Amino acid sequence: MLLTRSDVNKGHPAYYQDYARRLADETPGAFYIDQFNNDANPLAHATSTAPELYQQLEGDIDAIVVGVGSGGTLGGLQAWFAEHSPKTEFILADPAGSILADQVDTGRYGETGSWLVEGIGEDFIPPLARLEGVHTAYRVSDREAFHTARQLLQVEGVLAGSSTGTLLSAALRYCRAQSRPKRVVTFACDSGNKYLSKMFNDDWMRQQGLIARPEQGDLSDFIALRHDEGATVTAAPDDTLAAVFTRMRLYDISQLPVLEDGRVVGIVDEWDLIRHVQGDRQRFSLPVSEAMSRHVETLDKRAPESELQAILDRGLVAVIADNTRFLGLVTRSDVLTAWRNRVAQ
Image (cartoon, rainbow, N blue to C red; front, side, top):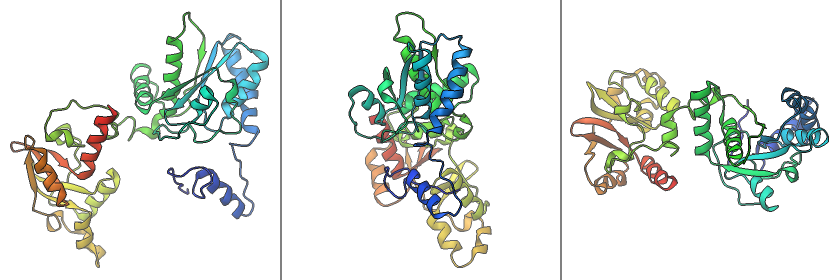
C-alpha cells in the first residue's frame, strides 16, 4: 500500500490520480483502470444499478440523491433514466468546500475549501459527471453529515460512513422541501467500520469541533481529552518506555501524564524518550519513572488564562486540576483547537 497526500491539488505529482498514473507508467505490465475517465465506470451503473432501482421501485422514482467522486454513478444513472424515466430528478449531495454544488448552481467554479467527509466532493469537475442534468444541489457540512450518519446507526442500526451521511442529509432536506410525498432513492454507499476511531468516536468529534461540550467558563474548556470523562491517555510509573511510545503512536499524542494513585507525578514526552533511548535501543524496557519529568506545572481550573499562557510560552504543558482532582492536560495545540471550535460553533 502506498500513501498519497491529501493537501495537494490535481496536477501535483503527489496527487492521488497523478501518482497512480505515474506508477502505472513506471511498472511493467501494470494497467491503470482510471475510474475518473473510464467509460466502463458509468456503463456499469447504466447496465446494473439503474435498472435494479427501477425494478425495485416498480418504475416510479421521483428523485435520486447521489454524491460525486468519480462521477460514474451520476453519469450512468442519468443516461439510463433519461431514456426510461425522464421525470426522475437527480439531486447532488456535495460536501461543503467542494466546488461541484457551485458548478450546478452558477455554472462557475467556486472557491475550493476543505472537508472531512471521504469519498465524494472534488476540487475539479470529473469528466464522467453529467452535472448539467442535476436538478438541485445541496451543500452538506461535515457536522451535518457526521451527525446524520451517527443517527442512522442509533435509529436504524446501519453502520454507514461519512459519504452516506452526506447523501442521507441531502435526501432528508430534499424530502422536507416537497409539498407532497415523493419516492426518493439514495445510497448507503460506504461502510462505517473505517470510521470507528473518527466519526463514531466522541473524543475525536470534540477535537474536530463537531460535538460541542458545554463551556464551563474556566481553564477546563481548553482540555481536549478530559480525565474525568475517561478520555485522557495516561502512563503509570512502572510502565515501560516502549509501552508509552506505543500509546503515543496509537493516539497521535506527544506527551502523557504519569499517574500514581490518581495523582500526577510527572509528564513524559517524545523528547524524554529520545534522550533516554538514544544510543541504546534496549532502554525501551526502562520504566517511565526513570525518564519522566517530575517538574509539573499545575493550575487550578479557576486560574486566569494569563497564567496558562505563561506556562505555554515557556514550551511546557499545563496540568489542570479542580482543587486536587486531575482534570487533564492543556497544550498549545489544545488552546488553538478550542479557539477554532468556538468560531466553528
